Length: 458
Image 1: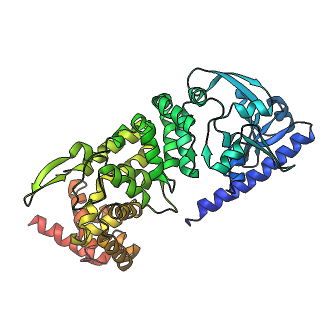
Image 2: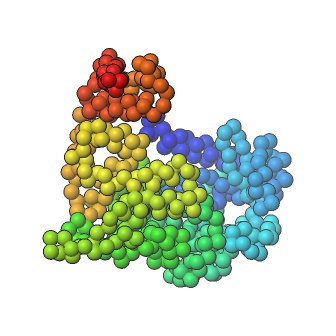
Image 3: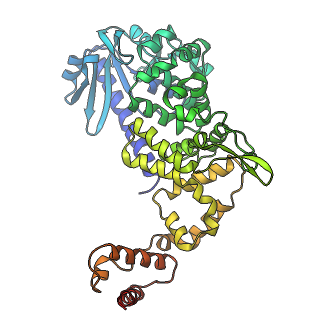
């Protein structure tokens, strides 16, 4: 699949959703209802950014929405939200509402229908409380959101303490928006965020994970990480990462400073385009084992900090953290494996060909190579091994790195070897010979196997 395909698919989906949202607004208005775009799509549109999703807010009640549109989903009808479906495209249509009685720090216990002004005032931040009529091309701003957009400012609507107590996820969302939009957080909103940061622990792991994903895959991830730390959110949701602060490095390979500073620099050196979530998290966690393994050792008469087995320890920590955040198991294993293997790159130029090929054949190798590059640029700056791997990759080619097996288990058993461990041992030895370039054809492989089997019977 082309790397451009996911991006093009997202653009196609956004275009189709925009068109459907406009048709929904037109139909609702034709029926005498007020209807507008709401939330992040308005913010992004006013900023000149392409919205990823389009939401509609209306004076029409859910039953009326369902009467007007033949295909709907009732996923949030109790909160006045109906999903309008057309072919494979979905648009959320919400009735203007007010809310009260937030008991669990996430959802209101009471919802009542209202008008556009009151609906705007129940939202989180002023830049998300703006409405836009895409038919009449006018903006409705009851909360000063356009002024804050111009000032590049995140400001809670009304009392920030109340806004954060209503929905604790807003604590993380403020940092995510400040990171991805490169906005500052208004002082009163920031003070409230810092005061209430521990409340984030009441939010589900999945919700926390999703917000952290957006922060870490942003091109401004280091700033987001620092905001998480300064606000107290980092210690609440990722205490293992917060523990890296103040953990000293020796200046021989790490002139940049402590483990925390190094981690921020590594994040800043990741590729801005096509940054995978797994790579971003591996960069964040690649040295997470250092606080637990730090020791001072005398090397050639000088005291230096060393971190024995920090990669293995870090992989175990990463696995536990990602499990806590409810990551899919396969993805979590990939990230923890990347943490475990990141130190192997320092030895690539001394590796046997077979070992090198196995490294380059790993399914996560492309991300691991980018992690190694960022790790070097975030410390000593030497890219010898990175350039060596690029060159060897070009020289070897895909077929050399991931060659098809020259023989299989049935070939070994056809020589009289019973099914069992010996078959596996011979196949592994054969693979080693193949990767080293000593065996290149099936005929050579079968002859070698015959010799091994015959020799073992003497």
